[in-house]
Length: 439
Image (tube, rainbow, N blue to C red; front, side, top):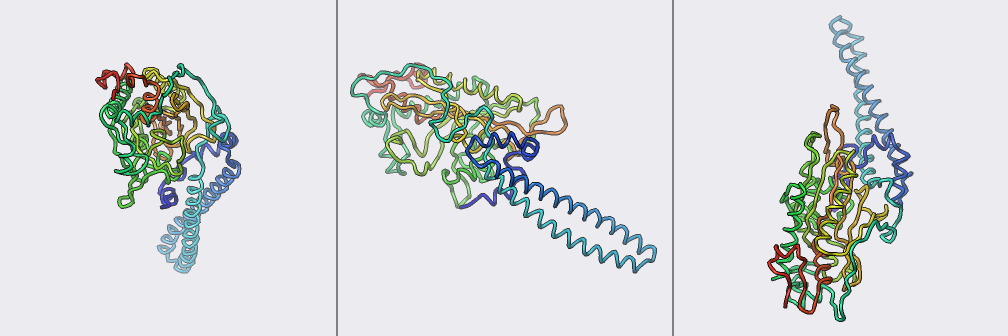
């Protein structure tokens, strides 16, 4: 189902990048968009052309309407003065003005529609600090921490451990639903629950307010946070009700503030929520997606922030530190990556990825993305802030995985396997009630 025309027609003129920004900072916008390896000049030239057409058409229509109002008043005065012939002449001119105005209105609506649809195709402009690049190999490693575990001979990847110990059942998920839907039982299920509780507790201790949001959203919500139209093929769609299963708690939680004006005294707004996440992950095949490395359903705790534009990049770093604290507590080796322009999400202005090392596989697994969207989402959301200045302005939105469980579980299992069993990180033991997963 193609949703782009409907969604774009239903939104304001600038549902993505702010038109005022594009008018006033054209050179900077082009420079930033070039980091995504798109033809930014051509895209912005078309924006400028359509914007000028829209504004000039609006000006012509306003002039005709003004003239029409003046003529309408004049006709009444002429009729009162008994100047019937002059009044009839004015009426004929009025009819022509009405026809001209109708044509201009049609042209304006058509131009606005084309402008909205064109803006829908332009991703967010990366921050100037974002490195250029096309592929994940061009991401920049910011830091790395923790020693790589040295496993003994016969160490197994998590999918073999889960089968051997009897707590992770990929085959049962296939029977019940299909590939990519894991089933946890016993100590594996308790480990999942422990991680969720631990992540939520750490977030609420850091001042985040906990929410339990819906797990399905309407198209307007998915559009507002940038999942539509960009990731339509990656989401599960309940067509009978026209609802989408959420790919992340970011979508419903951020949309709690859609169509809102927030007073600056209410900032910062810090929200956290646990949800299952559903992603079709079309086209994902191969050994690198075995087990929990890439699944269609997984659990995740998400932190979301609404901030003043002057504070958002300091907040981004604060959110990164929060995630680092979780990884340190779990005793996992991790690294922080600054994503290049070509590897960032459609709506992001800057993204850090956090990866943990899974020792049995000998590879890094992404477990968190922390992003600043600047005004891209808030423009779609119509989410504004108001302070001492009377005119509200767009807020900045941010979010981050804190954390995604599937790959965290994979790394914990692989890195902590011993001849006696699989050791549970100390910080989780009060939640699990056991220190070791045993057969």
